[in-house]
Picture (spheres, rainbow, N blue to C red):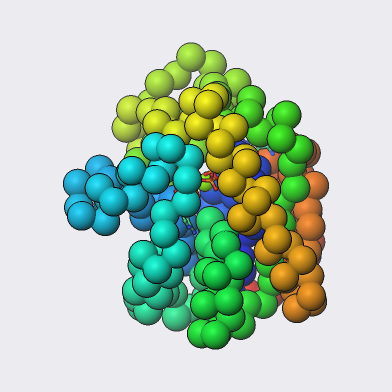
Length: 209
Ligand code: AP5
Ligand code: MG
Ligand code: ZN
């Protein structure tokens, strides 16, 4: 099964991706996570990506597309994958269409007002877990692996607003692109995390391959 998760920054793509990947045995491919890993490891790709991410801009298409192609060629993706954060421009979507079909594109819809609150309270772990301060009760370490939680550099209010602008301009056109292909499903992302996941499971049904 090949799934794309679409939605604005803070919609809950990463939160749901971890659950879906586990439940359906898919590889979770998050372009944001790959860029952040490169940034931590100070690779050339990380340095290049950082200059865009810090400003809330997109990393250039050619760099992103070839990075995703390399990732999808790895063995764990053969069983199926879940793309989180890619494609996010029409050029990326078209390059991807040329390579393969997707089974379903799940759009998680959340209005901008809610997104700012979600992102400014987000705390991350390097293991991929995502939290919100409202659910941490003051805890500063990850309940899955014990590592210290951190705030993303691009989660400050000015950058968040910029990312939302970029989403509406560059990524939202993909909703119509995938609707025209008949693979788009829209989920109400304003609901609680478990309800959003239940709605996603309902559309995915028992598909486990
Ligand atoms: P990326 O890391 O992909 O960030 P994003 O798309 O901006 O999305 P986020 O990760 O911010 O949000 P999310 O939807 O995953 O929400 P989350 O689950 O964390 O990209 C970062 C940057 O990398 C980009 O700006 C760009 O520079 C670059 N980049 C990445 N991909 C690229 C590409 N393809 N092309 C070019 N550049 C690219 O949830 C958010 C918060 O809300 C958390 O605190 C969470 O606990 C909480 N929450 C989640 N769901 C719920 C719920 N249902 N109810 C209440 N709270 C919730
Ligand atoms: Mg994410
Ligand atoms: Zn962790």
